[in-house]
Image 1 (cartoon, helix red, strand yellow):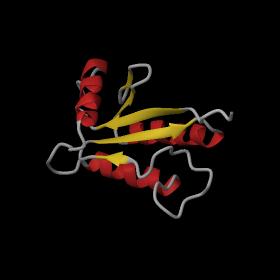
Image 2: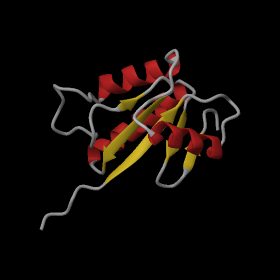
Image 3: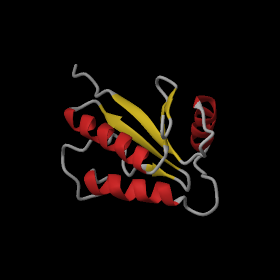
Length: 122
């Protein structure tokens, strides 16, 4: 029997400068609690992050067979992007890009597996 691919999730959250791990975890849970997302204006930081990430790692056809994404398209809302990644060499480059772009746009990166938050400027 062939092993199933292993995956992991990361979320990028538009939060204010006072964000902490508890607030990031609560926001992630709110985003995942239902299929409906918060209403309102798109956060420009999320838009810039999402556009740049998708230009490097497309999440809609046509895309390369070595995509880092386990689920496409990426889950995006007005204030977040949730990414389901595969454990593969391609995901290493995607994680690096996610971390760099999140820092550039001053977004929080939430790792639901470890319950760690990577805060902008930290």
